[in-house]
Image 1 (cartoon, rainbow, N blue to C red):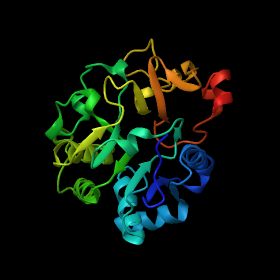
Image 2 (cartoon, rainbow, N blue to C red):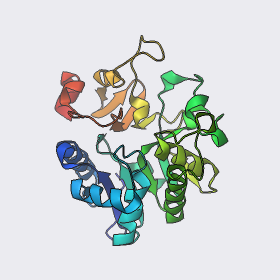
Image 3 (cartoon, one colour):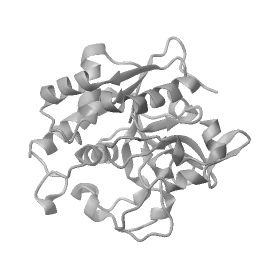
Length: 272
């Protein structure tokens, strides 16, 4: 297992209001189980409200990720590595790729293999509308070494929020998931050395690419984490199909009761 050294400062940054704090604590505990030297910082309700006022974020919080990152860096300085991770994530194995791969910014796939080449252009920013689904990344897990990326990410979100630019011109408004749009635009076109931690063919899951529900048609209301019931242990490690699970990310918006252990089968529940 590779871990940050004592000389290397690694911070994991979580945003989690006090009403959902048990979820944030599960995320924190799962990180520190595998990587006790990582400093885990949770932005609770008071910090979130302060950041909302500072950056004029509305209650949807869709544009909050880069604002939280910027606020932390302004108040605390730059670590060697900052991992922004959502409060509905569980770390299930050592994050070797995060520490060992060469990149300036890394993230995780948004879509599972089951999405395939389904037409998602209506959900993509105009400027990168035709990228393959397996290269669209999720804002729930972002690892940053070059903090110019954080500045560019923040500026893109603020431009979307303030109407300087539009992620989706066809809609004539800011796409509500503008942190995802901004992340992908800067990740794709910003000139940074990037890495998709669970890229197609890697045999890994680092987030929401482990979420799917079979037997439904596109557009139907589904339980996107139904797949979690199929997680099994191979040699003591969690696998979903033929992919090793490093991180699970529930996603699906903000609601109570996330990361409920009933989402897992009996064998895997004991592991968690």
